Image (cartoon, rainbow, N blue to C red; front, side, top):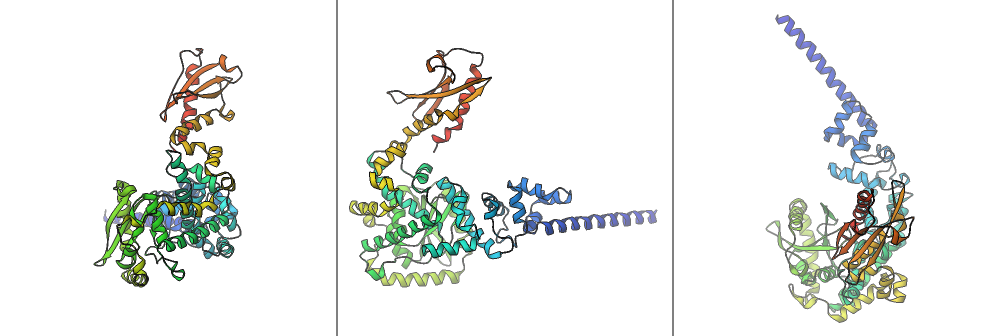
Length: 513
C-alpha cells in the first residue's frame, strides 16, 4: 500500500514538474516574441492566462489595449518600457501611439528615439484634441524620427519644445484678448470652447504654435517686469521649479507656477491676488501649483510650504477665492502625498537657496502677498489686449474681433442661447437626412419671437407644408420632442419619432459644450 502511494506521489510530482516546465517554456517564448510587453504579461493575469492557453498573443494584445495590430507589431521589439511599470500608464502610452500612422512610430532599435517619443506623444495628442485636428498634423516634424524632430524644432524656433508654453499662450490670447470683447457683448461664454481653439489655432503647425508661444512668453515676461519697475537687466523674474514636469491625476493636470508672468495670468483668470505671491515663492519657501484641464485652463490654485522637513498645503482656492471642488481638493492631496513627498531634501534646499538669492536681489520690487494692489488696472488690461493681438487670425486683426466672431462664431458672442441655434443648424443640414421603410426624411428649423426654437421633420421628397411629421422644442437650453397632433398620422409615426430622437441625441453635445 505504501509503495503504491509513493509511486502515485512520484507520478504527480513528475506531472507537476512537467506542467511547471511547460508554463515556464510558454511564458519565455511569449516574452521573447513580445519583449516590450514582458513586464505587462507578468502583472496582468488575463494576459498570462492567454499565454498559458496558447492563444494568439497578437490578437490578445489588440483586444486588451484596443489598438491596431500594426501598432503592436511595431512596438513589440522596443528596447524597454521606460518608466511604464504602471499598467494604466503603459496602456495610455500605447493608445497614444496608435493615434499616429505607423511611419510616425519610434524607431525599433533607437532607445533615444523611443525615449523622446515617450516624453512628447501624450502632450502632443492632448494638443491635437484641444485644436480638434488629427495628431498627424502636429507630428509632421517627427516623421524622420522623434529625436531628430525635437532638435530640428529647437533650431528653427530657438526654444525647447514646451507644450505648457503653447497652452499658456492660448489661454493668454483668450483671457486678455477675446474675453473682454465677449464681456462687452454680455456673452455667457466665459471660457474658451473647442470651436474657439480650432478657429484661432487649429490651422497652425507645431512650429508656428511654438514660435507664437515663445514670442508671447517674451512679451509677457517683459510686461510683468516693466509694471514692477524692474530695470532692463532684471527683466526675467522667474525661478526653478521643484516639480519640473506636468503631473496628471485623473483628468486634471498640475503645473507649478514659477514666474511673475505666470502668477499674473493665474490671478487674472481666477480673479484673485495670487499675482502678489512672488515674494513668498522666493523668500518664504512657498510653491504655487495650478490645477488645470488639458488645454491649460486653470480650475484652482494651491500654495504649499516646506517647513519642518515636510510639505504642507497653506491654502487652496478657485475663482473669486472660493473653495475648490472635492475632486480638486482630492487631486491636491494626492499630489502632495505622492509627488512632493518623494522629493529629496537636498533638491529642495538647492532650489530654496537659488530662490532666496533672486528674492534678496529684488526684494524692494516685490509686492506684499495677499494684496489686490498688484492686480491689473484698466490701462494694463488694454496693454495686454494689444500684446496678444498678433495671436488673432489675420482676418480678425483686419476686421476687428467682434466682426470676426459675428461672421465665424456668433454663438460665442451670445453664449448658451446660440448653442441651441447651432444645434438646430446641424440638424438642418442635408447630410442629416435619414431613410426609413423606403422613405427619406429631413429636418428644418424656425426661431420664434419668444426665443423658442422649433425643429421640424419632413418627408424629403415632398413640399415642406405637405409633410410635417414632428417638432422639437428648444427653449432655455433644454430639448423636448414629440409627434405633433397636427401632423399627418401614419403607421410609421412612432418610428419617425424615434429617428428624430436619435438625431437629437447625436447633437446633444452642442448644448453641453
